[in-house]
Amino acid sequence: MERKESKFSVDAEKGPVVEVSSVEHDRREYDYTPEEVEAYELDPEMSKTVSRAYDRRIMPVVFFMYLFSALDRGNLGNAKTDTLEQDLHLVGNQYNTVLTVLSLMFATMAVCGGYVTKRFGPPRMLPIYMLGWGCMAMINAAVKDYGGIVAVRFFLGSFEGFFGPSVPIYLSSFYTRGELAKRLAIWYSSTAISGAFAGLLSYGIFHIKSSMSGWRILFLLEGGLTLMVAVIAFFVLPAYPQHVKFLTPKQKEAAVLTSSVEDASKRVDAPFNAREFFAPVKEWKFYVLVVFALCYGTASSTATTFLPQLIGRFGFSKVKTNLYTVAPNVVAALYLYLLAFLSDKVRQRTPFLALALCTTMIGCILLAALPLSATGPGYFACFLIQCGAFVPTSLFHSWHNNNDPSENGRAFRTGFLTFSANAGSLISSNIFLDSWAPKYTKALIISASTGDNDCPEYADLHGARQPKEEQGTRSQLG
Image (tube, rainbow, N blue to C red; front, side, top):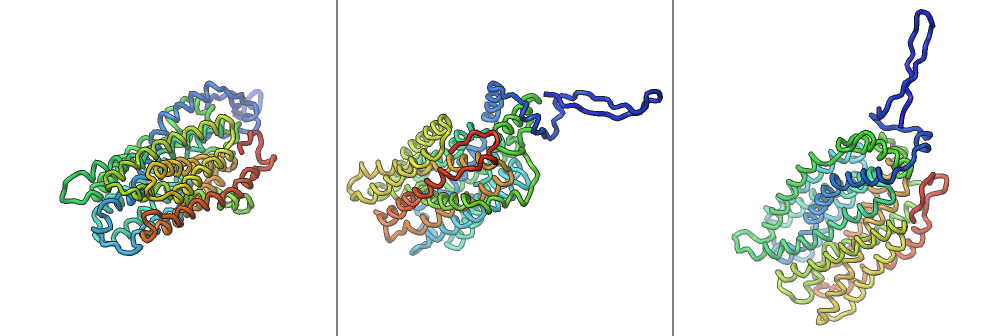
């Protein structure tokens, strides 16, 4: 595509002269007029080439970043099966209080994370957040008492809260509406994989005969790996499409124009605008999404944090309990990939969200109803809980990011909805009480009820679509 450039000069004989020349690929900001966007013809092969370039450079990094985010946030469940409570002299519900502090900061910092990331740029801020919680994870290995672990988890939750909403915002700047769900599924499947990895890692570490407690070794190792990935991310994560160095000028042009034609964003790397940033609060459907996120977040937190405790009801040793967390998480990752692929293929989100919610709800009800002696059916119920818990995050964030044409609006919406979903962990942190162990019947019923409460919101979500005048040329995903 060419852009015309005009130059004014004065000729001694002819007088004022306007020279018009063609300048190819002078796209320092890659700002295109509506006419240029309308005239652009999508090139499927070029789009695939660009997407594959993103996949090679971006997806492995964000996958491992979130893998260690989930590991460092959820390793308390594994540590509890070791000697964490005895070593730190935790009594009563102090363990749940530690989880509450972590969940509170993880939730409340999400909105701030959307703002800070938008202001200073994801490639710069994502590694900084990761360095922060990686340091906290390693310091966690040195704590001696209840006050120490509360303080460390306060800061760890804060850094991870900044990080959480930033990845969907970042990815939505690169991928179109038909590509985003699969990439978010790959990104969020790292949570399920982290559960499997944590189980295997704990299984191995808790076999070590050492003067240092197994959970301390676990925290040191995971924190150190987190810092290593953060340093790599500093040098690998690219800026926005128009600035990346691994695309040719033609590919940059195609990347920006394809996004504009698909209308995933009015403008990629748009300057911060406070009015656009807070615009979602004026929309009634935004509050439907807030309730929806809160409900599915409770089930998700149940799966990511308390699976070792749920499997512990079967009376296995601490080592076997961690080992048996692997299979449900691996199957959950495969289930997430399947539903995300089908969702992109049929260009629908809400039916698959409903299926995932029902899967977790059935698992919770089944596990609550079964006696402790029913090991096989109970373990199967754990698979159902895990499978349904990981799907909503990827499909939900894909849905609302695809339907917000403003990059500033997406930053606020993603941050606040991440806060709402993370707030669900405040509920789960205070219902899985030691006094309700090992069956956790009441906790499971509450978790199932949040999925049931999402059904009315699902109906509104299916109808909460952008008005036609806001959709432009987009084909709606609902």
